Length: 322
Image (cartoon, rainbow, N blue to C red; front, side, top):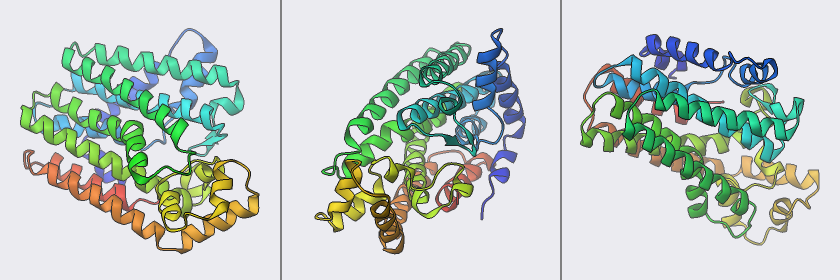
């Protein structure tokens, strides 16, 4: 089993600087804002997205003065989306800690998320690379569109796996793709390599989200750092529940769950049936398909230790338990 520490070791010098850049973000002159930012940026996150940016850069010209701000921006952007997600889902726990909206108001949480979006853009601007700045702006628009698609479509019992993939493309895959491509841009990678990095990041992000949604059924709150079956409890369709619905289109219980009319017992019944059926294995097979596409993309990148680490990250993604 690949450990995240092994992946981080390849770019440990850059990640140390990324952590310092993230600590610097919380050093503002308004104590409440500083406290809330420090709360959401505390150590303990996987730091996968900044690692991808640094690894992509290490394949070419490893310029930490450019790569570190971009890598930190990727983590800030990711964190900002989580803060807004928690408001939309009314989540109370994230990474084993209370969410901002559970200790302050939803409006406060939204403003903190907005601040993080703005600060991430500021960090990208500090690279003085117009292509990276344009990519970041386009990615932010894709993410917002993806969140809207999910907000209005993920509770529709007529949604299909194609709809789900479209949500995930905007919600997760776009950020992974940008993390990889931006690292290449800032290290002077040729166009063919940029295409490969974008494809790698996209497919890795798709696999990552599919596994995340599987773990929502198979994992525990202690493993996940948030309530298990949270999406189902919120009446949100993810790939496992969509696959179940494809097999049982007339199951009124799942439709009642999506309409928030189901009893707690019905939610438990559906979750148990999904967990004990072959649905999760089928979802893992789909994650493996995206993983294979990510590995194929690596063939167009230089054969270096950083590329081997990017391949190890695929293995970590599809085999992780949290």
